[in-house]
Length: 168
Image (tube, rainbow, N blue to C red):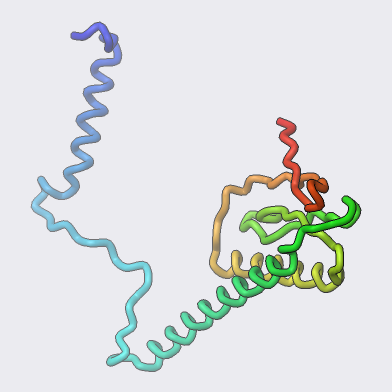
């Protein structure tokens, strides 16, 4: 016996190895045929049930449209906040963007209010955040549930910039 493995642990390691190898064999020694798992979604044959097939197709297309709407809202928001130029730091905001499935914002963005309709910007951002939250609920998405800390904003070379202050 090797000096690397203590004598007391050797039987435990041997048993663990035997169980691991036997788990890989599945049905090989029992004479049973290996069977693929059942699909999570039952396929609908349009020849047998054209009504259900049409309904399933409509539902799928609706889901694709909803995702496209959320993505379009995101593109609109990002276009609105793309210009981060400001004259002073008072024109800079830190706003939540998106929604994590566990709750709270997915991220924060630096936004300049210089030359922008702030009310319209906030309304569009809120619409996107609500759509993202609804999409997460509809799809049953999960996330890491980590709290995204709200960063500070500063003006760097005339641009609103996020400052992540690590406090831990």
